Length: 472
Image (cartoon, rainbow, N blue to C red; front, side, top):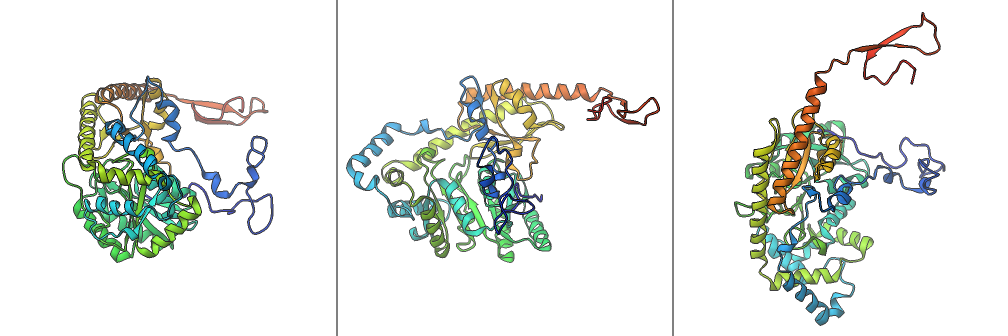
């Protein structure tokens, strides 16, 4: 579906306090913020994500959080990891505590190529890898390099909320492309490209999470991967493949990455946040050499270089620890929690509720019965001590009110069952409310225009209208 950007390009349609080439928007709350008239226009669209807004709630011990996608790091061999990091500092402190290369540690880049080979990317060179502060920075760097204000980015509907924040800050316009249980729909992608060309829009790239999608939980099927690559070839379309979950499948070997099919048309984003540790903040971008050069320059302008200690820690972990076996342990743990989620939903959710059935990753995407709004229901859910992420955070146009994302990666299975039980009661209560008020005949009222006598003109409207008889 087509969307409009959360904010308009700098200076458009706004009368600034200062005249000239770069007028500033008029201050909105000068008494609250004396610097309000100095902010860049792009800041006016900034807002807290639906996930960040929940942090203060989900930290309460009485709340079962099905909201945040936090990996189960307690399943790591923490003693071994702690000793490994301690040895790095004591034995290699001169290197691990010093500045490093803007492109990242060469040894880590070699090992990253080994990791990507598990998904069929066997032609990657360490020289094409740029280490980043998580894949989130990688996405930000790619967007900085390619996107100008007003450009169009194609993205699945729904899309990862962190990506939408990056695109918003770049003042891009997001056009959503429909997906279903088999992932992005190729016909919908081509329709979006046709519409953008007809409108004169400049499409910079397609952003996709093909494996165990965040938030939808679905995986792009093999036939559709081939179809989408064929469309990209016909339309000369660049693809940004964001793949933090690809090794976390429950029932099959990792699927062959889009990047494995085209080394020049696909830029690949990877991360160790889901397969090792999110706290280390180590990710990477695999890009053609010309793009790599620009990404390194953008990195140096932004952070000088990624942190040396965390890079050495990940490289040492890959060198010395049984990381493939650890990933298998993670997948078994997440499979158990996925099963607890699906079984509880099937047993407890009222009729009319539907959800996806992921075969890997962290998330279930739930659709509420007709008429319910996940955002409006959220305060009552928090009051019942259960948290989720409303669907509107995953759409650039504010749609998705009937959806919510449930994350099963962090709570124990018994906690998940209790959380779903609480959530089902909230949904049932919402349905009861809607059923009750849908049966009430609100009728009409006759409003008398203020300041008139008995012969005054009257106005008929619904009883829940914003116009009242006293003129308020």
